[in-house]
Length: 60
Image: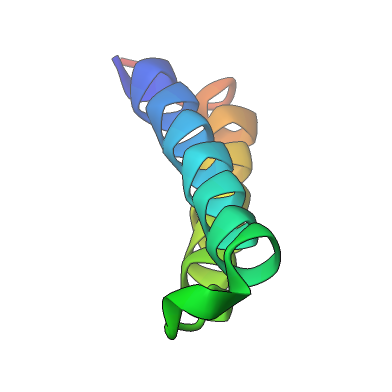
């Protein structure tokens, strides 16, 4: 179950990074910054990778 949370965090991080990059670079006339979703996506990606790595050491 913990592994699925890590995978979901990675998927949501990738989606956030892609949407942030789209808003920042493909739609500069939108008037909003895409760096915040990119930063949050990177954080979610790192957390997901940590969860996946540490889930191997958990004994339930």
